[in-house]
Amino acid sequence: MTTPLSTGRLVSQQEALSMTFLLYMAGLDTVAAALAYMFAYLAGHGLVRSQLTAGQLKANDVAEELLRTHSLINTGRVVTRDIEFAGCPMRKGDRVLLSTAAANRDPVEFGSATDIEVGRRPNRHLAFGAGPHRCLGSHLARIELKIALEEWHRRIPHYRIPDGVPLEDQPGSVSTLKALPLQWDRD
View 1 (cartoon, rainbow, N blue to C red):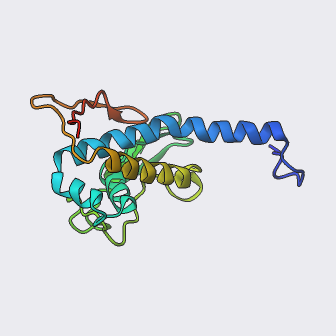
View 2: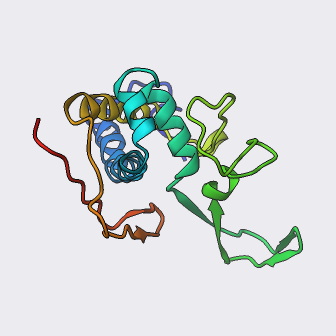
């Protein structure tokens, strides 16, 4: 397949607009889902939230660690040939799920992998994939998450999930919370 970029010609205005629109649309549900998990965590962890609000923790560091611990993309692939991997037979045409959430909890890669450690270094999580399958919008998503965390907490530093309200996951190719009811008081 030949694409405009591989032919040496410039991308047309319509092609550029289409790519920009795709980048924007692809980030809507994923960024919203990531923010839902981040705000749910921060609503229940007042110390981390107050450190973020006071500038003792950076929004980028909070976002990166919560992306690692609450990865939401479940990438599916179709097996192209019969193969056995780690004792698991897979047949051509089978669908497999590649769980970045599980990879991001690997204790070989991440010491104390089940703990949330804002500012973890290194933090080579796979929330945005890797290699040729890395999310093209990862840089934009990181900026959006940082700005959302900073601006929300500048305006609404104290919030909570109402007592007795259970949070329910909505699993899928993009996992999210079914709802996130937050309460805060007027200042």
